[in-house]
Length: 350
Image 1 (tube, helix red, strand yellow):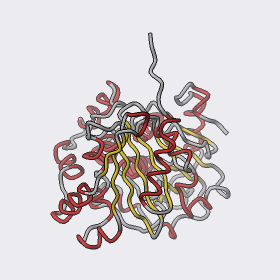
Image 2 (image 1 turned 180 degrees about the horizontal axis):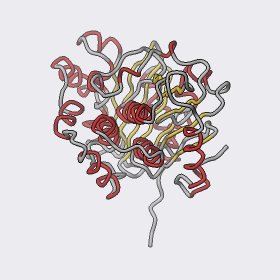
Image 3 (image 1 turned 120 degrees about the vertical axis):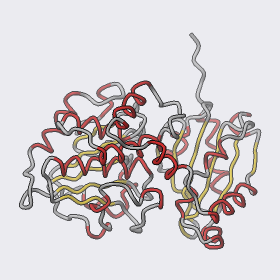
């Protein structure tokens, strides 16, 4: 099993070559080998965009026995329902059970695959494409680069090595992935290389303005009312995280039902919460089922929230992570608060 740690945080030439060989060793065509692509539960823009963009690249190579899926209810968030390649998406119970190659996208741990984890052991090869430092290395070939701003960066790197040229459909998927995981190019991982990749994607003819409006600036009126209500119950704890402060709020399934909204409308709720000046850490707790909550964590730099999330079976990045919590929202947040001081990032001095 190869891991990204062998390359001081990046992907080695050996790992790239192994992934290229895994794909090139398959037979394309209607009677060729089967490839199953999987992204994580409750998929976001990077998970879906990376997976579908890569799937379209495989189609360009002549592969036709392709399926893409994710665990859980087969429902795409509204902003992603027009992504190119969506015709390749199938419900999780329609996934290939005898795939010749399984590829995962933006999946940091097997727990994020839900019931689809059962597809991994029988597969001749599993290639994992990811950018989470907390990745557990569950693939046989792991293309994991924690320095990458999005999994789409890794996906584009493999497409390039496979000789797949970018077209507008592939580019739209990868651009959605890149822009969502960089917060519309404003997060710390937005490097010159990120802008260079974005430029190459835009050169294919896609419209960044139209994509951004669809992804970031289009929400139902009911969603605005819902978010206003959820923000109204936000609480500030200025003494948390060693005095750096924590702000948190929660949203229930009843909130969604009352306003007639789908869960995806809460995906961007973390943004106004993390902007609170008096808090380094922001916590959003969203109900998944009775007593079960999706917990999103953000830090402005004082806390390594990936360590907090990992302690609860989740994962992510230093400044953005998440996990599944249990109990009441208050109990979940109290548990998070207890972990914050142990996960403070020590400043470095020249």
